Image (tube, rainbow, N blue to C red):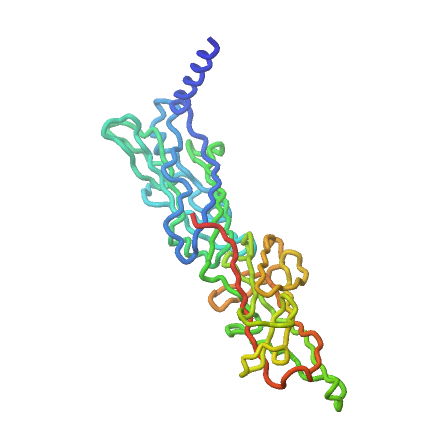
Length: 377
C-alpha cells in the first residue's frame, strides 16, 4: 500500500507543476572553447527554453506579456538592454554584455541578440509568434490568447571575432521577467559565461631583444690573463638571453612543454652530459680542440628559480597560472598579450685557449614549445 501511495504522489506532482505554476527563470553556467581564428557558429545562451505556462486558464496572453528585460539600459556589466516592458517591436533585441579576460583584465563589450516566441497551447491551427524581449503587446489567434513563451538569446559568431586575443573571457548576464507593471525578481534569467578562446596560430617563442629577428648570441671568449703570457691565457663567459613563451591563451594554459637541443648526431667525446657546443667554422670537426662546450640554464616558471637544461631533455611545467607573467607586443598581434618569462643563461667554464684551434666558432640551438590548452567544443 505504501508503494502505491508514493507512486500516486509522484504522478500528481508530475502533471500538476507544468499546468499550474510558471517556470521560475533559470540559472545557467555556460562554458565554451573556441578557436579565435575560426570561432565557428553562434553560441546559444538560451535556445527554445520555456518561460513557463499561464498559472490559470484565464491569464490572458501570459505568453506575450511575459517579457524579459535587463537590469539597466546602459550598464553592460550585467547586460544592457531595455529595462522594462513596452514597445511594439518584433525584431531581435540587442543585449550589450561586458567580457573580461581573466589574466590581463582586458575588457570587451559584445552584443548578444535575443527574442521570445509567445505560444498558443492546445489551440488548433495556432503555433507561435515572434516578439522582442521586452515587447508586451497582446496577440490573438482565432480568439485565443498565448499561454506560454520561449526564450532565445545567443552570442553571434560575428561578435566572437571581436575578442582581440586568446584568453579566458568571462561575463555575467542578469535578466528578469517584467509583468503586471513591474519586474518579477523571483523569475530571474542568469547566465555565467566563460569563453576559453585559444589562438594556436599565434603561439610564439618571443625574444624581446631581437624583436622580429632570429636571436644571435655573441659569447665573449676573448683571451684573458697576463698580456705577455699566452701560455696561461684563458677564456670564460656567462651570457643571458631574454625569452618569453606565449601560448595563444594569455598564459592560462594548464601545462607548458619545452625541449631545447643542438644539432643531433654529432659525437662529443669528453663533453659533460647534457651540455651544448659551438664548433670551429669550416672544419666539420667535433674534436675537443675544435669545439667549445657550454652549459645552459633556464628560469623555471613554476618555482621562479634557475634550473639546469639537459640537451634534448623534456621540461614540463604545470603551474603556469601561478607564475610570473609579462605584457609584450608580438609582431603578429595588434594588442598587448601576456607571456611567461623564461630567460636563458649560457655559461662557458674557464678553459685554456691554447687547447683550442684559433678561429671563429658558431652553433645553433633549437627551442621547442608546446602548451596544453582546452579542446574546442
